[in-house]
Amino acid sequence: MITISKIYTNCFLIVVGILCASALIEQMDDTDLVHLITAKDNVIVLFTKDNCVDCDELQVVVENIQNELKETIGAIIVKAHNSHMVNVYDPSKEPSLIYFRHGSPLLYFGDYKEDEIVQLFTENQEPIVKELSDKNFEHLTQAATGATTGDWFVFFYSTDCVFCLRLHAGYEAVGARLKRRLNFARVDRLGAGISTAKRFHVVESPQFMFLRQGHVFRYTAKDYAPAKLIEFVETGYRKQTHPEPVPPEANSINNFFAGQLQALTNNRQLLIIASVIIGTFALIAVVMKTLAEKKSAKAKRAGKSK
Image 1: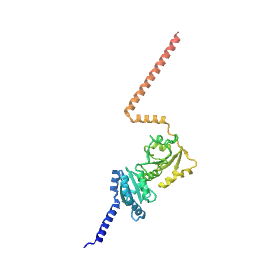
Image 2 (image 1 turned 60 degrees about the vertical axis):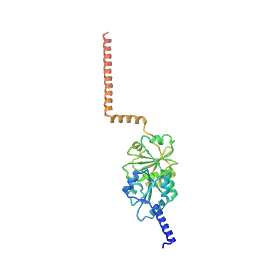
Image 3 (image 1 turned 30 degrees about the horizontal axis):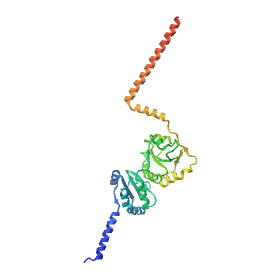
Image 4 (image 1 turned 180 degrees about the horizontal axis):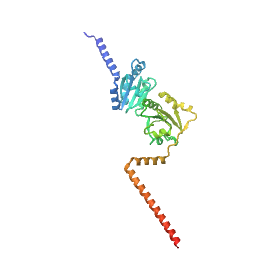
């Protein structure tokens, strides 16, 4: 005969089992993870590996807050164990906790505190770093015209730089911590920002620079950890007692004519029309000059005959 105590015990074990099952984080392989990140807007991934005490500690923290994160930001939370993808997003590797917002990664760094993780992800559901190009760099930063939009921390990267790709999540983390104090941008130095890179004499990737009050402070260290970048823009830049002045923007008139010439060169039909027009004006000029010379010579002969 089943005793009441045994019934209570069984019920307790069932409840514990349900709670434990709900606390577990779903694990995914790299193929499924890629599909999830590209298909969903809010995805939080915990990267772990074997024989990693820190990984186990962070996993417990994430398990405790996953329901809160699902409710507050609607995030899907998964775990990637021994994943190769961690190399793409975090140079420091496992354990790593990354929040993908519309595919844009945000790295959590710091102590494994539940409230800090929830606060960081809740307050940064949209990317912080702005993508700038030659067309809008000066307009938005006003680096050479008074810097009225505030200070800017700029990350020059290139698409052929694999290491640069690994820095984007950490750079977003820096922006998340300091977004109320300065602006954050990135520029493709070999693509849409090639002229801006030349203007600031950027010849390699990655390169970080702090634009403050008309001056350029270059980050020369090779340690790109978020904490180091934060330290630089907060106090480290002051060690550069003779910073460079912000280089002037290329002459807008020259840029206009260069752009028009390039557009004309790219359009064969317009090039032909322009050539015909120029040739016509040249012919008219020659004819008018010839007529003027003949008229002058005729006048001279008439004068001599008198």
